[in-house]
Image (cartoon, rainbow, N blue to C red; front, side):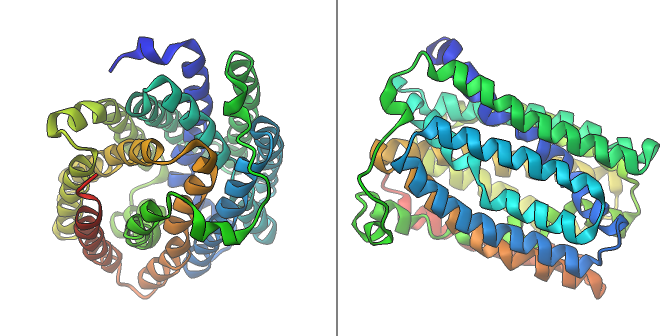
Length: 390
């Protein structure tokens, strides 16, 4: 990977696109347990996590259109201010306020805007694989910081949760000056694609509509892993093996550190296999096999090692898929296509956590993992069949 081709400005954009890793790293460990601690049942937690994905789908579509219609930097700045403020509201510890604030962060989906900006920059410099792999790697490095912070509630109680949410809000606010600094040195077309109007009728006339149809198997990924089990994985370990939250934070930190190294290798895997599509299928297929055997493992150290391996393999594919989409989509459609792609994977996630939470509630702790394995395997086969020629 040639970091020199990305340059200082690229590093600023990549860093801004990655700071949200702190939120991902912390919330993947503490969010469901925090909700449990303030009086929410596991079923209700699953419903809220599912609603987050449903609202995220709506937010992705709306923001995707706005990204191609108005000044991208101004839009990103406004959405970042709103998102940071909503995260701060989650410190109050009142279930209804925490739930609403968390759900609204999904509606104001600033990630679509920034992905479009980074994608336009990467396409102009011909560094899509490198930019998105580096962004994923940085994201995971920051997620290690977030996972490490997850030990705070074990020592500080309620104050620990509050400090984590404050740190998450600061991470959101910091992305604003990074983007503003980078944009000053870039071509104005990166900031503003300027479609003439907003209309849902345009969806059927997009030049990228063929690609959107072939990305539909991603919905099974959203329903399976990202829906049924991934948001509840820390809760699964907590309920099945009674691992305390501090130990979970360390495991997630190690897992994310390993993934950071893995995503840096994603362009190399793509070059060795001579195809982004085959690389995605290979990595996701291996991850699916590992996940399928996890429920039958009761040796905890081995199980945790498999958890780390699965997480690395599955998520190594993400930057390659993003790069593939970025290269195939024209610049004036990039915001909408990234928004629609996010929507495709988000809608099924609205159903998944409710199913996973309910199954855990009635004692079927392992069933979400089996469901996920079947859906993953189906999605990987369909993805290869539809996109193998690209």
